[in-house]
Length: 399
Image 1 (cartoon, rainbow, N blue to C red):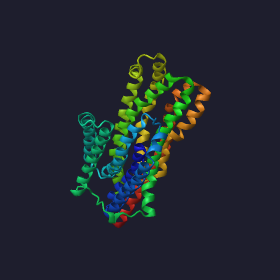
Image 2 (cartoon, one colour):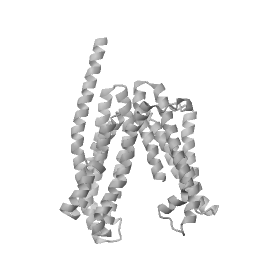
Image 3 (tube, rainbow, N blue to C red):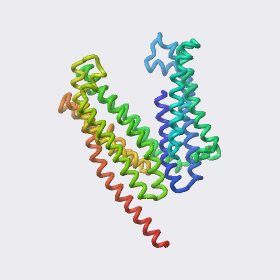
């Protein structure tokens, strides 16, 4: 449930962040305040409704999630505290994206690190020193999330934020919600596709035994570590791109695009080569010597390593389209790797190619995603060049 709340918070937060960066670039502070307030209050309101419903139907939900009669008392003890505290995390995830949109990355990093470190430190104290058991773990998590919330509140109350968060600014008009959700919904979809793609791989590998499933799981975990680094890099790229586009600083935008593609690709090439060259050693870390798992994982990791070299390129453009407010294009590119390209491949290829179809499904989807990106990127650059020429022509006429 916590994961689902995070996804909803990301939908509002990331959707607002794209719009806010463009508004700041245009200098439209009044609308920016309304968007920031509307996104935050909407996220917290939706989160609160879900939390209330989850609290009311807590036992049936835990039963549905697999809690047995033996586990149920402990699960209820933990969940009653943890579920209520999730409202802090809803606030934190939404604010993380909004604050990032104004370039205050240090504040978001401080909130994340402080919460994580505090949680690690408080867990043994509440569980063992205070002898609270599972309730102690929940209390430690709740306190950690609340402290992260305090970091954001301090940032806002000290007037360091570019935005004013006020109930008077809450204005969920049709146009404003459309602007937020046209970027937020693709973000939510990407999160769902990640889970869906893993389910498709496991389903396809199910007939080949546990070793194949374990091998593919190891490959997924290894590649996901690389993707998270790229996503973190692009988290800083999006506000710059959105602000530059909103301010019509097209030269700065082009420079940001080139720099992002260059450095993300350099990283992906290095990581991809490491995956391919040391594939056996890497996969061996996930097993105590299962030869079949190592063989399957090694073959897949080599292919994924080479295709990962393309990841930075098409992910930069997926993030770019969303930063510029082009939700449909951003959705198409973002959904390619684990949706539009991947699903047909993982459904058809194993039938035609057996186990190899499973091992190479993701690399093939990566290559197809990169090809689609080339065409969409070409169209975007033509559009940006035309917008720049139009702006220069207008300035010359005014001069």
